[in-house]
Image 1 (cartoon, rainbow, N blue to C red):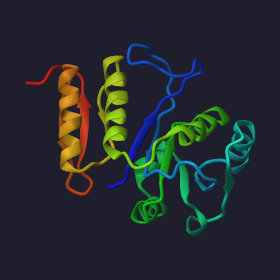
Image 2 (tube, rainbow, N blue to C red):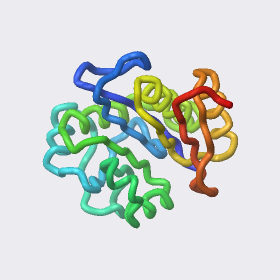
Image 3 (cartoon, one colour):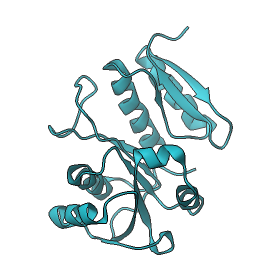
Length: 187
C-alpha cells in the first residue's frame, strides 16, 4: 500500500478544521522527498506546471511518459475515473499527486507539499487525509471518500472520525476498500 498525504490550500494559505474556504486537495500516494523529481503531468497543463516549477524553485523536470517519471500529478476528475495510466502508476508505486484544479496556485502548493513531506510514513499521511476529510464534513460537505487503505489504517481512520463524533463506513473490496466519512454521530 502506498503512502497518502493530503494538504489543502485556499487563497489564504493553510486551512484549519474550523475554517471554510475553497481548498485545493492534494493527495500523494507514495513519497520520494529530497531530490530532483521527474514529473509526469497527466491531465495537467504542462505550461502551468512549468510556471509553477519556476516560481517555486522546485527541483523537478517535466517528462513525457510514465516510464520516465518518478512522480505523477493529475486532476481530481481524472483520479476519480482511475484511467489505465493511473492504475499503471499505482502498480509501479509511482507517487500520485491529485490537485483539485488546473491552476498555477494549486500546482505551486502541490510542489511545496512535495518539498516538505516526510518519506515512508503511510499511517501519519493517511490520518492527515482523514483529518482533512473530517474538517470538510464538519464545515458542510456531505460525505468524503478517503483513499483505499489496509485494514489497520482504516481502523485508525474510523477511530479518528469517532473522536470528532462523525460516522464512518468502510466501502468497497480489498485492495480498493476505503473509509467514507459521513456527517452525523455514530450509531
